[in-house]
Image 1 (tube, protein in one colour):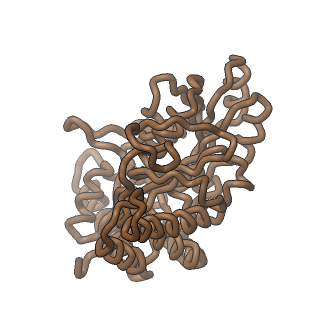
Image 2 (cartoon, protein in one colour):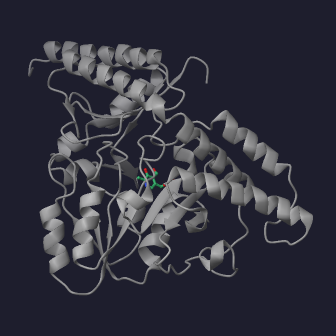
Length: 375
Ligand code: PLP
């Protein structure tokens, strides 16, 4: 959209040209990947090439990759497919983890946004049934990186398996499944420049996972249904591009840090949520209580700057961010935070544009306060 600035890459990032090209190419290919004839084999080749690329993004091997319809389905498969009913997840997880199984219990977060390892150890020790622990690599709202390696060490002491939602970390920070030591890892295509509607669960060789979607032998029996060849091909191309261009995240971090410095200079009362922990280089969660987050998002949108708020709107009500609430923020603070997230096609001018509009919001608010007798 001409003259608009997109700063909501954690929600979805624009499709990369390489991925769009791969999708279009796959749509021109006839064939069901399960068919044995040459058409089927050509479609199968596209799926298997993509599997190699997605595995490389996660530092895994291709046969470990199970394609799904997205991150949400992969998280559901991880939490429900191992048959473990004792499931401990960090309180800041995405709803697709928090709501995947009725027996999920939340491990509290510390104020800095990282999972409380002492609380996790105590919860693991409470019960001797084998547990499944799910802790994300990077949070979608704050960008806070979780100490997944320490979670794994702890979990192993109690015979627990570990799942990691790496949807937001992929393409932004380097990681590999083997060094993380996790048993399952979730990825999503549209967060790395691929199309919406494709994702993957990467599964350790020694962990049997039972399919949620049944009625066909696809994906080694772990996910039935004809594969979406175009979406998967686009996912593969995006994964390759994300690995190749990961170095640009250093530049995004410099721009993100400048944005935060200038925001704090404009309104020193502003909190940058998660700033005290290691974070993704592209994400800023800005807590300014001058105005509800939804109002800030709408005002920025009117000025053609797209950001999002951590608060979720359902059934006509706005709920404060569960992530910030879990970090100990008040409902007011948790309802006043906006998320700015940069991505592969961001430009430094996008940050300038955000700052210009946001400066106007702060100035209007201050002018309103001066006019108001209660100020
Ligand atoms: N996990 C995290 C951390 C996310 O941010 C998201 C999407 O916002 C998901 C999972 C769900 O992924 P998808 O949109 O592919 O279902």
